[in-house]
Length: 231
Image (tube, rainbow, N blue to C red; front, top):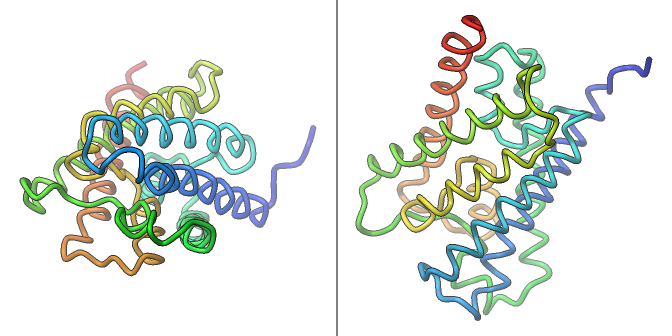
């Protein structure tokens, strides 16, 4: 029997997996900025597919090493649900943030500013028609669905062996629902990696921490006490 991966390998997987996901997710907004205007139907579909496929691949590639969390909010949810060791949670979150910032830096270094600037290098932002409170609620609901999909299709021992496909499809659905409202980040690393490298600091930045964490925690508790223990 092979030994369990060391913590250093797990952290490397989380950093690299998050790098890949953010590179593709934020990069889709940058790379297509001249083809589809922000907020259009075409840009929404592109974002949904890129973020969903990117996450599906990244999770599948890292699942056997670190569990493929790739998201600080999901990491907190896994901790609350008893699916990750407490001593690993903070290092996972740091590794995820490092990977996300590295992806943002790679985009800034590689793509023309004329493409990245108009979309703040793929940073999520709130639609002017909604408040910060509504933004938090939307991010919480979207992350609840994502966390539910993670637990039911990847974490639960009874889950079907489909890798990150179910998780990626959940992201596609979430972006189609909320992408034009909040950017459908569902992930503090996905939000703050591009924000930090773009120098984009909106006054509602906390929406992308509080909303996803609340949604992930509620989903983890619901799954743990309503599904796992009653099965």
